[in-house]
Length: 111
Image: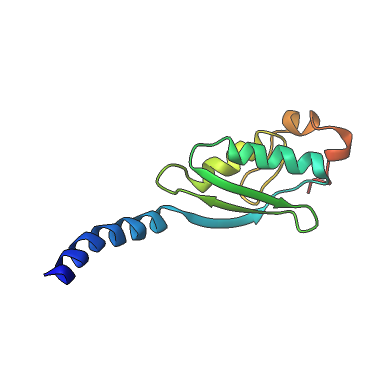
């Protein structure tokens, strides 16, 4: 009887743990930038969106690694938020006026 009771109590906890794992997704894509100032701006733009749990941009590779909840935010919205700060991503290009407002050290070569 004790075993059945333990199983019945543990089953819902296991289901909740599995459900939480499905909420988070990982993504990685390119974001153009040059320096630590860019890093702070890019990460802040990503983290400002509800549903983004973690954002880490790597300077040498120009890659951002994200953990986000796809039920709350789309990758398109994240790309758009970063591009609005003047940084081109692999899926969204920053407007010229947003790029021009970047400090000189942050202005990268645009293709």
